[in-house]
Picture (tube, rainbow, N blue to C red):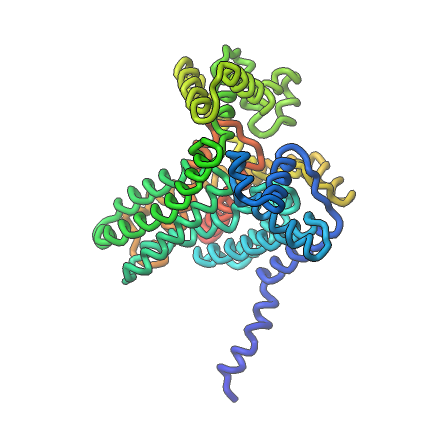
Amino acid sequence: MNHSILKKGHRPLIFIQSPIFWAFVSSFIYWLYLSCTSSMVIIFDSIDYENLGRMIYSKGWTEYFITGPNREPIYPTIISVAMRVGSFFSLPYLTILVYIQISILFLSQLLLFYVLKKLKTNPWIIAGIILYFGISPALVNSAFSLYSEIATYPWILSTIILTSTALKPIERTLPKIALTGALTGICFLMLTSVKGIFELITPIYLLLFILFSLSFRGQFKKKFLHLLVFILFAILTFYSPLISYKFANKTYNGQYTLTSRGAWALYGNTARRAEPLSFKDYLSAFAYAPGKGVCHKFFDENSCQYWSFTKSDEFGFGMNRKLTEEGLSGDELNSALIKLSIKKASEHPFQYALLMGIESLKMFFWESTKIGFVNYPPWLTKIYDFSIFKDSLRLVLSILSFFSLNFSIILLWRKRKLLTTNFEVETFYILLSAIIVIIPYIGIHAIFYILTRYALVISPLFLILIAFMLQQITKKAP
């Protein structure tokens, strides 16, 4: 008997018996159930996304540019595709959109699995992370609501995969390095086309990637040409389409920009942080970081309301309206708001920096059962409303996210010059890639106001770091 054939024949059975397989299956069954029992709530920003998707579907891209600058284009495009498919099959577009977003969530789950396998993670830890990704209240909410965060997951995970393999210490041809760089640039372009803040993060990421890569000893410094080619092609594929898009906005609506929402929001948050504050105000700001519910347990409504987005919007819209009445518009208006923001921040630099640091803590509280914008079945709503469950889940994930980031940074620094195998180098680059996305993302967002759903963009990276930390801890355990 050919034992090799028998062994191969048993592989499907072995895989089916794997906890990882059942993590995928359980997630998929849960998503299908929710697709039949939940519904999207179209409110706030989702109204704008819906209108833009309908504009692209019914009037085309010319109208999108003429009425702009509008929101980043990828998510409205996905909505317009759902509308077109729904029209063809005579189905509600929201039904089509849910299944598109479930598909995106599943693709992201597969990419997460690939990264965890690259890290040689214990199968039970992989199964746990994959299952959690599939049932996480916040991540699942992003797949069943009409908001853009869902569209970032595959691209941010693909970025980690590409950059972690770009400079492995094996012989690679320059064309392969160039292709990896080009694909990395495309990933960042797609991220920027969903979340415009990646226009600022991308150059920071590439710069940090260069600096850390050149910190290697010996043979790694010989890879300078590879690094140069990688960065060059990443820059070309990122900036060429982005600049073209901005020129299209300039041609049709007079503003050379990707989106026009940043300047007034920057001023609103800066102005709020520059106001005279008492010790109580600082404490309420800190209490607001985990969520307004925590703040309300210790402070009155007015104290907590000051740190909500409505207060920063009040400052931002007020100054935006004032400058508009003075005759400013377009690029001149944005430039004036940015200059005023810099002036405000410089008046109280230490206060501003402290409040920015407090704001950044919100990114670790990415898990939540109360993001909203979805009507769930009654039994699930009751679970999500149960205080002990929702508060404990949010606290545990925030602690794990915070400590896993710091754990990875410390380990990365200690081992930066002690790498000897291909696996160690790839692990190094996976961690490095995740960290140099997370830190700039948190830092730049902290300049503005952070909503829980903004943190979802980097939540898959937190799950990678959590898995890595658990792997290292359990590996050392007796």
